[in-house]
Length: 311
Ligand SMILES: Nc1ncnc2c1ncn2[C@@H]1O[C@H](COP(=O)(O)OP(=O)(O)O)[C@@H](O)[C@H]1O
Ligand SMILES: *[C@@H]1O[C@H](CO)[C@@H](O)[C@H](O)[C@H]1NC(C)=O
Image (cartoon, rainbow, N blue to C red):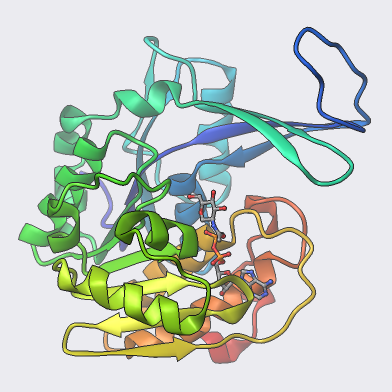
């Protein structure tokens, strides 16, 4: 018997290997950098960790390698109170990794090897079936096989579990089934642009593009707009609503979108009757905290560090 959970995330784990150097190396060149660090990333894991830090009972459904990074990632989940009952280790591939080089101008060059993430499939979903069908919300992205994400959303939806789908990284030929399987379809400007072919350069554009996404069958759409907050649309009242956020000094926006989605999942699980715009307003404020310090998961706030009005 597994304990019941509120938020189940089906998605990716990635180890970020980050080197900071004066410039990016050319082919065949070796250069010296000035700092190296290892970080925990992957959109799915990021979202799950943020939801857990706000107080949600979370479980992650994912696959890592039978290797050092996989062992480490499992410990990272345990440290944040995320259930690892459905975190599987495989000897067939390495834990997902992103080798990142950042130059002094802040530009980067990145190689992502999805590795074990791509081996998450139907069998793993079957093993997590009870959790997926009894959760309050299931969250998916596109850093694992799209078939796996779609299946997980459908398993949840068939059991009246709320679904959040984050089509990231976006693919232009997204299967139509994703829209119908999404209670909340949440993406950023560039993803909305790629999915619709329409540019998103303003709040008005986001409203228009949101309406187009809504028409494809989701119950609601949220397009995040960085320092401008987000736009929320619901099929029951499709007029786009801009939800602005407070001005902050941003230091590192990596993973802001994942913080937003993790927060959204927490609110859906804990305050199911709260209006979606209010959830989005609060998720904006939580993501705004995450941009004020460096790192991805390291920048995600805990409940104890946030104003009580957010709970
Ligand atoms: N500079 C910023 N100031 C305040 N909030 C921000 C800032 N950048 C991002 N956010 C918050 O994070 C959310 C997601 O950011 P966004 O840049 O749209 O996503 P992504 O991380 O996918 O690029 C925004 O909706 C907003 O709430
Ligand atoms: C949107 O998210 C993708 C990752 O899926 C990222 O590469 C892109 O820079 C983001 N776009 C904006 C406008 O923040």
